[in-house]
Amino acid sequence: MRTVVTSPPYWSLRDYDIDDAFGRDDTLRDYVASVVADFRKLRRVLQGDGTVWLNIGDAYTSGNRRSRAPDRKNRARAMSVRPRTPRGLKPKDLIGLPWRVAFALQDDGWWVRSEVIWHKPNAHPESVADRPTKAHETVFLLSKDQDYYYDVAAVRGANDRRLRTVWDIPTKPRRRGQIPDDDHPAPMPINLAQRCVTLTSEPGDVVLDPYAGSGTTLLAAAQLRRRWVGIELKEEFVRLIERRMSG
Image (cartoon, rainbow, N blue to C red; front, side, top):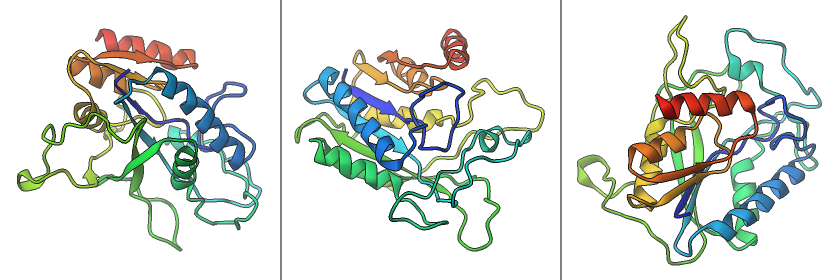
């Protein structure tokens, strides 16, 4: 495997109806430990000059409230589960989950090479009145070694400058009544996956997504003439991937 582009289920924010599914860990510490354990397996199959792009979202604590009421208009919100307040944090605290995971991976031997801010220009406003609404997620570039493959000329920024660490990539808009081809509560935009694949792999390389979800990373790899491997537990999403890859 030359590169991994992935977004694991966020801690307590998605319920995919699978017992013991990743992301349903009881505590924040358990979740971080699960990520580290999975990434040890990735390290074994990754080439020496290989890399990982890790997209992971943050969350706020909400006391001991554990679930939301059903929301038929917003499937992603309906599948959300409010995380318990971890020890050392307070209700309504921002958890800082991305960097907690990144520091744990760094301690386990990974190189944390870059923090990319994925800015969502079309982010849906949150129903909050005491803080700014979130409009970004974090994407980390990790490497197995201090020397790794990265094509600095493959993607250029504005005015042909070197790529910066803030990426403006909108999420896929959903029109009312539209039946989406990637019916997944947390789909990654194809443009984000394509950029990551382009920067850290070459045509013919193998791209892996161990939490394949709707298969966006796999589709991006195929479009860019890379080979691909995806791992997904939920049968509904496996069928979705099969439809997208054969379409």
